[in-house]
Length: 419
Ligand SMILES: *Cc1c(COP(=O)(O)O)cnc(C)c1O
Image (cartoon, rainbow, N blue to C red):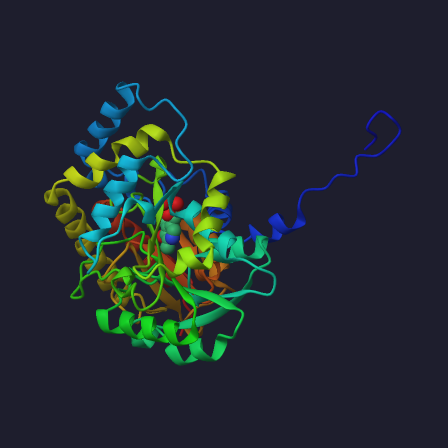
């Protein structure tokens, strides 16, 4: 195309953004949504992403809503935030996290971010240096891969083992790491696997990371959303053994992902991160970035401090019941293998048994056809690094859950190999 002065517009978009963002959660979910059949009058059942905020049973607590209203109407928070977040919010997060730790975090250990997503971006940028590599779980959360790709940070994957309750394969991690490895990521409670790690396992991770001399990035955006036998243990418990960056957010526990409030906490009682200069890098990244909305920050002390236990236990009970139903129904579907019942977060992973299916050629194809024929959205495993699997979220209203699972079963029957 001519630009009017005889020259051609030669500007193209950033190619790397295109390839790094090609397999994110959002891009694939958008593709599935555009494959829906508009003439299906039954309505859409969204079991693709973990955002139950639109379902009445999962509405956030009134305490949190009131805290926002009060902060907004005070007119004290129409200002820019400071780079790292306003002090009352940092203090509230430090106190909230310290309840589960053997030492106390100070407000200086807390950096506010625009949700957990922004925390991932900041940490990966701060740790990046030419030649560096990072160890990521497979399956995992694709934003890590995308931000690593954009920053040319080399990714090495270690497996989570389905037959061992999605534990990490510690031996393979040792074999992957070298002198250029900066950190490893663990997601606990797990997305996409719905697993929860025990104290003993996390201790082994800490010992190994210490031996390798690498930091641990603990993605705990599903903190406390556990409903099996194991309690939630934050990785920060082992902060004196190995420096831990904890990624947190109110998106999942309070079911307000649209409020965009998350944080990075440095669990580092020995001050290793300060001495290494990484904290300065984090602050540097935040300096050129945007901060969470100031009045939402201002509401945090009330949100974290005054939410009643009743709300948390209601949500956990809903998730437990939904996980039970989902696991039982999924077990009845012949073309699925499901190694593990979820114990936390909002997801279950199921494996497709190709020997029983016909006219479907990949997990993505399964999801595209399911969207089209049954108006049910589930996430193809390829997005989380596991082709031939599906990730299903059960965090939806229970009537929709039963309906959605029945439609998936009907779909599988229709596409089973005829004997
Ligand atoms: C949802 C999620 C995030 C992002 O959190 P937001 O607060 O929604 O930005 C990060 N990591 C994992 C594992 C998640 O599931």
